[in-house]
Amino acid sequence: MIRRIQAAIAIAVFALAVGNARAESSMNANYSQSEVKQMLRSANTPQQYRALAAYFRQRQQVFEQQAQSEKQEWDSLRQNTIGNSEKYPRPVDSARNRYEYLSAEADQMGQKAAHFESLSASLAQ
Image (cartoon, rainbow, N blue to C red; front, side, top):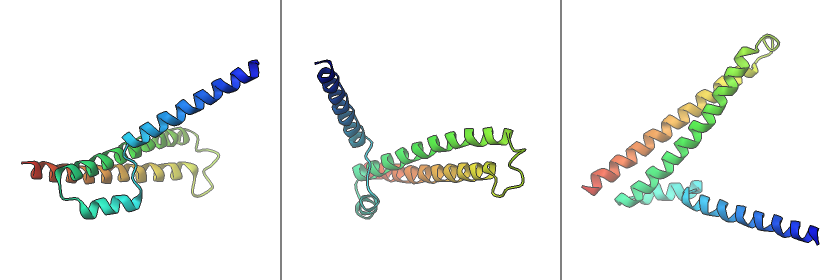
């Protein structure tokens, strides 16, 4: 009897988690690469430009979060470079390169979002 109750609770928790994940994904506007390309080609209204700007802002935030975690990894590896100094690429170099890449991607997404925000604002007037 207790196992059935535990199984029912586990199923209920799983169902709630799936429901929350679906609601969150629909709110985050996760688009496939082909959907974004189509939106870029067909966008001509302020609402469409705002949707693109929101998409690129979300991507910017994701890249910034990833860059922040990679920066922490880079900082921790910089403290311990004695044993890894002969191997190339060193883990600290890889972490630095990944941080720089993610930062550049975040900047690029921010520029795209600003572009579509300005297009939306100019059409709304």
